[in-house]
Length: 366
Image (cartoon, rainbow, N blue to C red; front, side, top):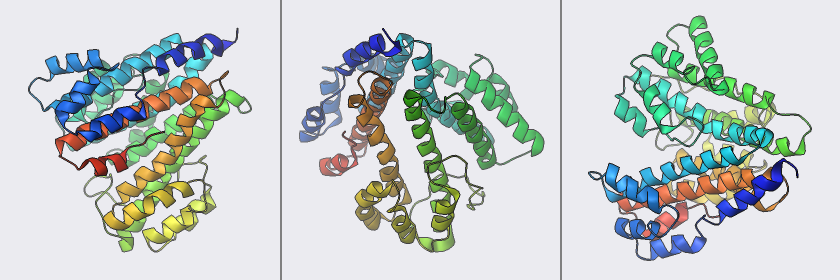
């Protein structure tokens, strides 16, 4: 029996709890927050919904649903890790770590902005290896220095690496702005994560591709935001802090898009020209699906969602590609994540009373 026989049998069992497409049709046919709550009470989310109703009795129903959804995802991913032998566990962890580094970046920005702990905690997504309790402790730290040192509290390899990166950047550049510190965090994560992977192992190649696509998403966001800031389009802001320059930093290395491609996109006069250049890359399907929505909204965030969906959809399809290897647990992880994103969209749609058809267009159903 290899490392994946038992694990994949467990994962296929866990996958039976995933929600079918019909679930979303049922909710949207009579779209209210009460309907969403009632239907989830008959699903694998039932216990988390009941717990969220007790803990969040004073918040809107849809907000309690969202808390329950992410609590369920966190416990599901923890079970996935506990069932995995050492090497498969590493591959799963490297995928989950993308949310850990995003949470640490959020914590750094919050500390520099002087946000209150409860405001910071509300912006975190506890689905990585850092638990909700651990993230709460980090959110309670009163200074950037204290937060940085607290990262080593649980002796997790990634967090130790992130602490090293923050300390090094602050030594080189005291008072560095949040975007510089965020850059240091992601550089450390990508270098550390890719360094864990064996170059020619077919199982580990899947994780390497996912990480490289993640690098592309960050590079593209910086480039496209810069084009917009030069007057290349209108639309709502996407990330960044007041007073920070929108000029892109040097692209993060080792993405799927090489430096020449990024430079050509960065040289585009308008966002529309940049999207046309992207149409010839592996992200072309995202551009094709999102260009009409972008044309109507002029929102870079909308197009970014379609570009990110390319990688998510590809990862979700792994679940049915190689039934004997890492594709099964990795594909399940992404299917579960996309399900939770869809449920969050339903919850927020209910909060803001969005039309069902508008919510349906936002869903990522694989």
